[in-house]
Image (cartoon, rainbow over all chains, first blue to last red; front, side, top):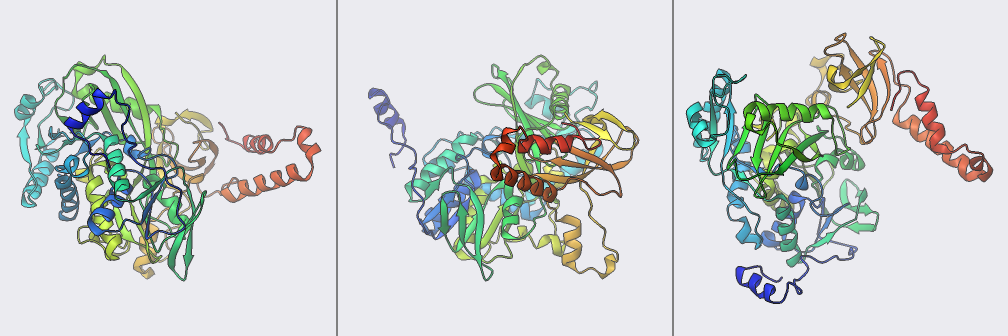
Length: 416
Length: 136
């Protein structure tokens, strides 16, 4: 792998950028691998990378029906934070946060991780009580967090309407300074390049059409490019997880919904942090390019169409303009939908299944992007050892039968 | 934006009047106390979540406030029919698969049928559209 560096950039500039190496190969599927990862998004590619790097398992294929990072990795609003309420999820998201902090160096790819802080606004007394409880829980778990009052919020975000005249006046917020945003595509590409360099085969345009299962043990997958064998298969397929689970003969406690987002025309720097409001129901940040990146809630109906309804877009922008009247005349540039696999307790499923050797990592719903490194890291460890990683263990699918749910609807809020 | 035919109001209304309420035809166990953890968990949490034909409950929230059912394609988002609570769908995934299969067989069996304009896709679309409450 040609390493990227400032020096390299100068060298390539002098050669008119004509001999950059391809970032990854485009291999032909081998008949057999040690591990197959289904789904070439951020989580799948991270899993493959950590399998190769941390566990020395390099005979790995990532099977992707489209192109790498073309699903929800390309469609999210790039927010990264770890201020979740319960110990189980706090451990998982904080694990990811710690990996984010060294990720660009680790994979030699600038993922533009910018710790510009995230505000979760409170607009009612109950909001503020919940925020205090969550921030206290975070601090007990070693996660940074502060409770701000309205003045504190106003001094961080001068352009926001924090006055008493607002329809839902801002009463305060939780503030996680280590949170922020990252360049979503770079995360997928960086992991892909690093995994490829370690020998992982990235198989694009390869759609899984079925599983080969004998005596309750996974034997491999059927694809549109022929059968591929492996004794360990990890599915990391977000919105399409239920479809794959059905192929393997079981159901998941998931519903797939469209989640829409939109970006505005590029503006001069005006917002240097991330603002989220559960109550008014929207979230916003400004990308390095200058576009406002905006999102809100899911479309309520099940859908696989990667698009949603206009009323949802309208509600989203109403919330943004309510908080930021200054943006009322900003024009929106693009709008899209991704298919999120929502779980009843707003927490992911990282689990073994009824089929031996078949693992699922899904149910991230509206907030999977922030967990990409952590999800890949613990899932890789689980696949390598055949035993769930301690951080992943509470997220077993069994919790929907045992009742040990991890209810993160509060911290997940508008979306996580 | 969906235009949804409420089978109680017997009118087409805009999506914003309605709330989707998830998968339809999930029967509550007759004796919840007799369920084991697996049966009860399955009932509460596990869903079909199909890519394709989906039967789902909707609430006419700012209209008659009644629940009813919709059969909808979760990929094209096309609403195939709406029907009242307690009724069964006339369009199902099996029904459409069967129809498509017959049509395909007809097409391959006799080329002259296809030439006569009885194309498969059109035929099933017409059948779908003729059902009460259907719309694109």
